[in-house]
Length: 289
Length: 219
View (cartoon, rainbow over the protein chains, first blue to last red):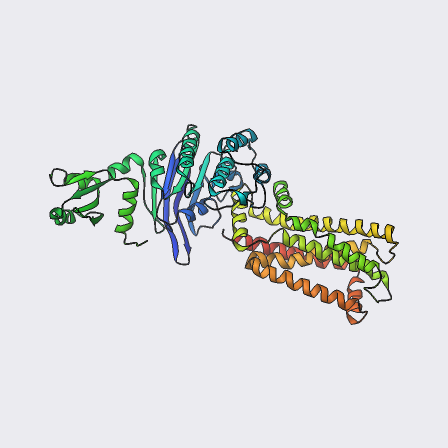
C-alpha cells in the first residue's frame, strides 16, 4: 500500500460552491502540489481531508485506511500548516508548544527547538505579535516535530518573503528524503512548486482538472506562438485556449496536437510553465477572476 | 483527555483567574450585615454558594467564547490534532466542575479569612450550599453549551448577559425578604437528592445535544 493519501469521488456541497467528484492520490516519498485559482476549492479539499468538514459522499483514505474508522490515530501521523492563524494568539510560542505537544505520542522537543532556532522564532513572544512569516515558521516547526509521515500544507508560502520561501522549499526537500513521508502542498504561487513538486493536481471550480506527474505535465501541454496569419489554422486545431498578443497569438494546446503543427515554420512551440497552464485552463473554462 | 484539560487551563483568559476576587467584594458586603434584611440568616450560605456558582459560570463562559473567527480558528486547530470531537465536549463538561471548584475554593478561603479578621458571623459555608452551588453552575452551563454549539458565540454572549441581569435582579429581590425569598427558600429547602437528580438529567440532555451539534459542525 503505497498511497499515503487517497480521495475517491469526494463530493461536498455548500451554498454556491461544491466539490464535485474529487479524486486523486499521493504516494509515499513524493511532494504533490495542489494548485488552482483563489476559490477553486483547495482549502475546502484540505478541510475534507482533515475531517473539519463532513463530506457528502466518497471516501478519504489516509495511510490506506478510511479516515472515518480511526481519525484520531491517523492524525498522529499528519503534520499540518494552515494559511490562517490557528494558534492561540494570546499565548507565547513556548506556551503554544506546551499545549500542542502532549497531543502527539511521538513529539520530539529536540527537533522542535532545532527548527525554532533555525527559523529564528522567538519563544517568549505572543503569537499575535509575530509576523505572518514567523507564524508560518512556527506552524512548520510544529508540523515537523512529531515525525509526521504526511505533511499537509495550505498555502504555506503566500505572504512570505522569497528568502523564507526558498528556505521552506529546502526544508521540504530535506523532509522528503525519507521515502516513507509525503507532502501535500496547496498554493497558487506555482513557481515554488516547479522547484519541488513531483505531482501536480489542478482544481478548478471544485473539480479536478488533472492530477499528473510533473514530467508528464510538461509533455501534456504545449504553448504555441505565431503570427496573426496563422491564427485561423490554430483555431481549427482546437486549442484549449487562445490569446491575442501584440505580436500575434499564443495558444495552449494538448501536447500531441501541438506537435503535429511543429513542422510549420511560422509557429513556435514552448513548454508552458505552471502559471501559463493554470491561466489558460482557467480561461478556457470561461471563469473570470 | 489530559491534553485537552491542559489546553483548557493554559488557554483560559487571565481575567477569569482574577474574577473570583469579586467574590470578596460580595462577601465583605454580606459580612457587614447590611445587604440582607431577612431575619433568617441560615439561607446566607446558600446565597453565597449561588454567587460562587455564577462566578464559576463566568469562568466557563470565559474559557470558550471569543469572536466568531477566533472560535472557528481554534476549533480548526484542535480538531486537526489527534482528538475526537466527542472528547472535546467531554472535557468542556468536565471542566465545569474544575472552574466551579476553583471559584468555590476562593469562596471558602475568603469566608474563613473574613470570619477570622472581622468576626463576620453572617458569612457561612455549608455542605448544602456547596452542592447547590455546583448544581447551579452545571445548570447555567448546560443551557449555554448547546446554544453555543448550535448558534455560536453571539447568542451565547446574550444569554450570559441575560443571566447576569436575572441574577442580580433575583439577589436584590430575595434580599428584601418577600415572595422571592420564600420561593428561593422553598427551592433550596428541597431534599438535595432531588436537586441533584434534576441537575443530572438536564446536564445529560445538554451534553448529548452539545455532542450532536458539535459532531455536525464544520470548521
